Amino acid sequence: MSVEKDLYAILGASPTDSVQQLRHKYQKLALQCHPDRLGDVCDIVAETSRKMFLEIDAAWKILCEDETRKTYDQQRRARELKQDWPVDSVVSLEDMTWDQDELAYTYSCRCGGQFSFSEEELERRIDEEKTNESQHVVVCCDTCSLSLYVK
Ligand SMILES: [Zn+2]
Image (cartoon, rainbow, N blue to C red; front, side, top):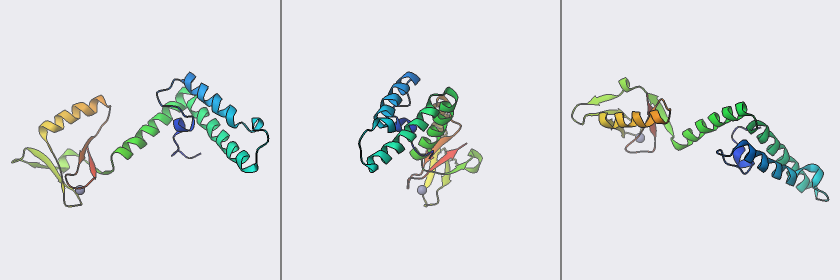
């Protein structure tokens, strides 16, 4: 089964749902498309329902167990982060140039633009990121949409 599919979306559920809520949604959907309950339908409908049923069943099997759900949540979160930030590369602070005039760290983007942030901003970001339990600070290019993880 593809890891790209959102298991919560398959169940029509939300990541904040409790396991009881998930079970309820799973059972409702599973009943709707269970092969034994379809009755007299054409082959295409039967086939679509069969696939849906397998998908719902597989999603539920991952989300009903605390451990597998936790692992899946982490993967999902990592994927979301990637989508939110098209990260160009990861650099450490030492790789950046300290600009004494601007009192800011700078780094050249491949588009010719610049990543730049002040020491003050860096500290503020680090505080923010700490609460998000993230190890990186994200800086965006001043010209294009690329971003940089600063360690
Ligand atoms: Zn750029």
